[in-house]
Image (cartoon, rainbow over all chains, first blue to last red; front, side):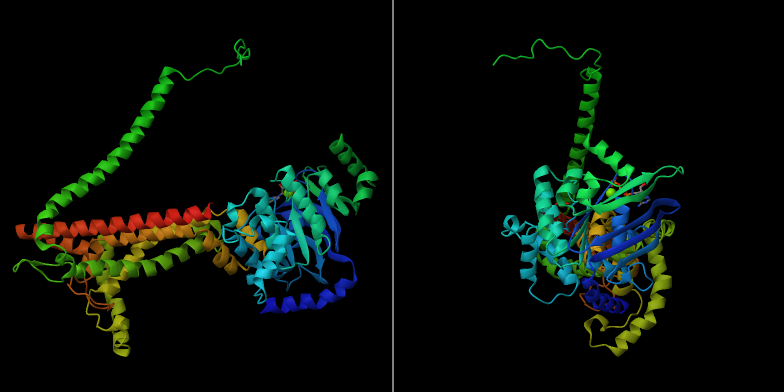
Length: 276
Length: 323
Ligand SMILES: Nc1ncnc2c1ncn2[C@@H]1O[C@H](COP(=O)(O)OP(=O)(O)OP(=O)(O)O)[C@@H](O)[C@H]1O
Ligand SMILES: [Mg+2]
C-alpha cells in the first residue's frame, strides 16, 4: 500500500518538476562498498530532454553513480550512499521511498543485452503488464519496437524467443522493453560495448531520436560516441592519493565545452591521452 | 597457384612441436575408455531387459493384457492381475510429485534467491541433502511409529466431516495412501530441491538485474522472470523426482498397507508394483515367479517411459529457450 501512495506522491510532484529543467539532481557525497570508498563528491544534474554522458577512466565509478540514480545498487548488500538524489521533488533515498517505484520511473539499459527468456512480444510487454496497464498492449509494443528501430526486423516473428535475436537486436529489444512504459528517465550503462560498429551506430541514431521524448543518462567509454550523442558531459576521474582508488566528478558541462575547452587540467590530460 | 609458403621455416626459437606418439596414444586410449563405458551402459540395460523379458515371457503369454486390467492376485486359483499395483504406483507417485515437487521448488527458491545469508543457506542446504541419506527403512519405521499416529486424528476428522469428497471417503485405520504419500514427498524433496537449485543458480545475474531494473518487487521477479527462466531445470527435477517415487520400495511396502484395491481415497490402504515385488518374492512359489517377473517388466517400462517422455519434452523446451 505504501507503494501506491509513493507512486501518487511522485506523480503529484511531476507537474511541479515539469516547470524546471532538471530531471534528476544527484548530490552524492560518498558511496561505499563495505569499507571501500568508491566515489566521492559527485554532484551532477540530469537535465530534461537532454542526453548526459558520463565519461572517465575505468574504475572511476561511472556505473556506480549511474546505478545509484535508480537505486539499482540496492541489490548489492554492501552498497551505502551518503547524499541525496532528487527526482520528481523527492529524495529517492528518502525513508519512505520504495526503490521498486523509483525503478518504474527511471528505466535502465545494461552493458550486456539481457532479454528475458520469453517471446519478443512478451519482453516488450513485460513492463506494461507489470504496471497493470489495461490499454492497447499490442499498440504500445509496436510503438516501442518502432522507436527502438527493431520493428521491421521482428514484426513477423514476435512470438519467437527474445534470445534468438543477434546481440545488437537483443540490445535494441532491451531498449524497447525499457521505453515501452514511457519512463521519465532512461539510464544506459555502456549500451554499445558488446556491439559491432554498425549496431553501435544504429543505437546512437536511436538515442538521438529518443532525445525528443526522453531524458537520458549514458555511460560510455567511447569519446567519439559522447561527442556524437551527448548534450552534456560529466567527466569522472580516480583519486589515488590516499592509497585508495576513489572516483570523483571532475567537471560537468556542455559536451562542446568539456571537449574543446575543459575547465580542469585533469580533463585536459585525459582527453589529450584519449585523442593522441 | 604455387604454394608461396613452401620455403618458409617456423619462427626461430619457437617451441611448437606436434604431440608425441605417447601423447597421441594417451588421447586415443582415453577415447576408447569413454566409448567402452558408454557401450557398456547400453549393453547392461539391454541385458537387463532381455533377461527379465525372458523370465516374464511365459507369464506374458499366459495372462496377456488382462494381467494389466484385473485386480485379483490369487496364487491358489492362479489368478493374477496388477491393476491395483499400477494404480497405486502412479497415484502415490503423482501425489508425492504434487506435494514434494511444490515443497522442493519452494525450498530451492528460498535457498537461492537471497532470503538467507550465505552461511545459513549453506546449513539449510546441508540439512535438505541429508534427507536423501536417510535409509528407506528408517523412513518406513518413522512413518509407522510417528507419522501415522500423528495424522490419524486429523485424517479421521476429515473423513467424518467431508465423507462425500472422494479423497476422504474412508477412515485411516493405519497404513494407507496418505502416510505413504507424505513419506514419498519427503523422499523426493532433496532430488527436486537440488536439481532446481542448480537451475536457479545458473540464471545469470544480468537477468535478475533486468527484472529489478524494470521495477519488479522480489516476488514479481521470482514469479515472472526467475521461475520461467529456470523452467527447463525445474521440469527436469520433477521428472527425476517422479522417477524416484515410482521405484521407491521399502518405505512404501511398510506404509501403504498392501491392499489390492483401486481407490481415490487418501486414507484407504493401497499397494504399488515395487511393494508387491518386495513383499511377495521372498515367499513366492514357483507359479508366482512368472507373474512377478511380468510385474517387474511393467514397472521397468513405466519408469523408462516417464524418463523418456521427460527427456523429449525437456529437449523440446530447451531448444525453444536457447540459453
Ligand atoms: N559490487 C561491487 N562490490 C565492491 N566494489 C565494487 C562493486 N562494483 C564496483 N566496485 C568498485 O567501485 C569502483 C567503481 O566501479 P564502477 O564499476 O562504478 O567503475 P566504472 O567507472 O563503471 O568502470 P568501467 O569503466 O570499467 O565500467 C571500482 O573500484 C570497483 O572495483
Ligand atoms: Mg562501468
